[in-house]
Length: 225
Image 1 (cartoon, rainbow, N blue to C red):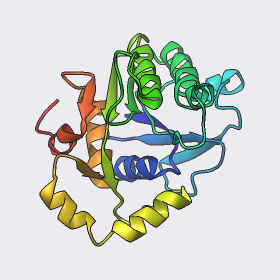
Image 2: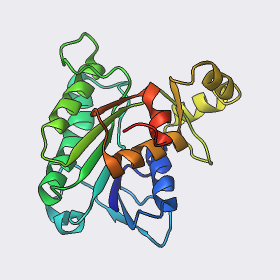
Image 3: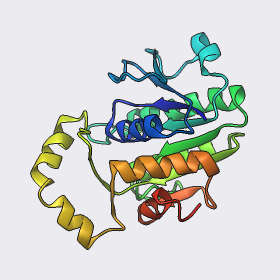
Image 4: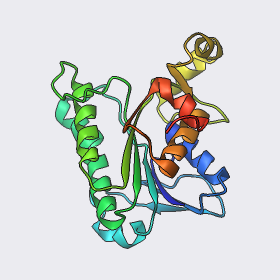
């Protein structure tokens, strides 16, 4: 497979990049973002592109791929609905619309969030926006679209969040995470599990387009599709 990763510098993006680089069936990885991924490997390359809403200047470099992992997401803190929607709806849709046209056989894997509102009518703003993003992605002519809704995520293998508040939170809760995972195994995923599950979705698709937190570990083990 030839794959694209948007957001390879983020915590989820780092997790799926690591799994892709280790996978024998992944031939090459293109990391797209406003800055370089910071990783180096014989089968990966960076495409630094400052405007993540317009890909007309780099379309030739985005053709010929089998799968895309879109891992860019922005917290709702400090944003109104228009600002949040621009970053968590318009941005992924801009990339997806371009890729579906250039790569009609592509499998598109999107990191959403637990609690996304598919009805788009609920009282929680961020959940409505995430649900609208999911629905609009499903309308695009990809071979398949898989929408992951992880809950809490445990960073492993040296992976760290780029968000200072999240780094502090993970530092404070690190001693508790193994206990919490033992108590709530269906609500907490590791970056390793999430990366493997996303790669499985890119290989085979999934029976249902939405993958909830409780299903991630089983998908990572190749037990369900």
